[in-house]
Image (tube, rainbow, N blue to C red; front, side, top):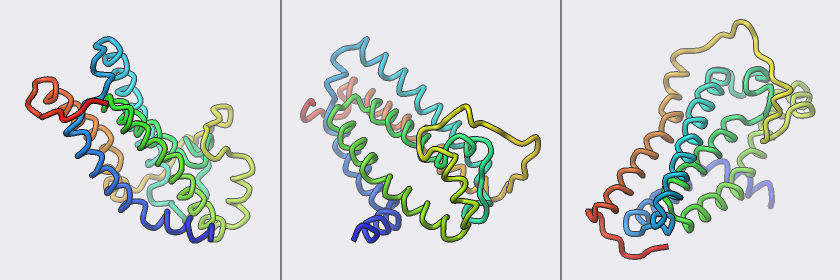
Length: 204
């Protein structure tokens, strides 16, 4: 039963994520968060959110350079992968938190972060099971010495040269930059609320 849930979460993660984001965007369009009432607090939160999204964008870019063209084909244990097994998910977590904070909405933040914390560990477990089957002992050794989600900078190492597959990397760029795109959309929505162009049906 547990394995079925893990496989379901991995298989339909994109579809479920899009449905959730769609409903939440509708919610954000018609509501305004309580953080917006305190201008200084709202500014501090927005700056922090932007920093998180920048780290997410460049972190995912860095990790993608190492993984594109090698995923499920070899054990990647250098660059960000020398510090943590799943750097893409780690940086995505920072980006999701940044987007949540940008909404200024405590309900949206609670729903999305709770969903991420519950849902994505299942996806990670499924990926690790797949890599164990495909890569065998090499991946099991990698697991033993590398943290699953919280990076350990003391383990960092990188090669002097690394082969990158430009076509595969180029295709992955859209997955990297969409955090920044969503951030800009959310900022526009916030501005339209402030200018009373978009209706605010309720405050949270």
